[in-house]
Length: 45
Image (cartoon, rainbow, N blue to C red; front, side, top):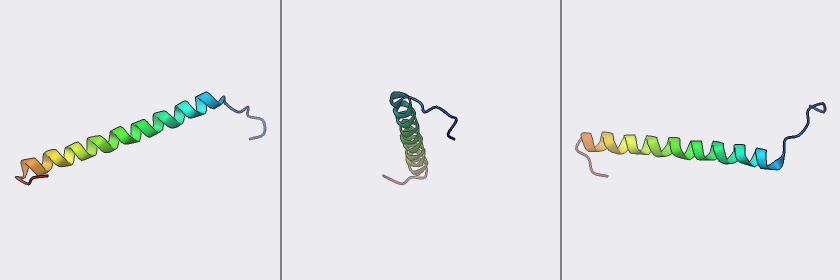
């Protein structure tokens, strides 16, 4: 990897924030789906 130039810090941080936001959003969707399934089954959250 010595031949590869390093990306700017802002670009690496942008990727980090993008991946973190995507994972938080995916977790929120899964939690919402679980709540919907529990309500459909008559359970209360």
